[in-house]
Image (cartoon, rainbow, N blue to C red):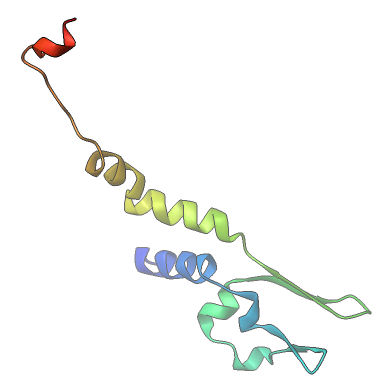
Length: 98
């Protein structure tokens, strides 16, 4: 497993969408044949089970995957420094001294 593999899997999870797997058509819930899913779509699935009343699909935690990607990419550290304006005064303007 490489760093690229891990990043690809996290990206697949972070940007997964239930509508890639399940949709409603003519008032019926439709489920995509898992044989037609991409590797990325399959890696985002945490579990599938037949409940007896239907199919339950659970995807891996998208928020956690996004947090890990943001941390890896250093987004927050970069964003904080890029959006900070530092102002230094050499003296107080006369109108502020009153």
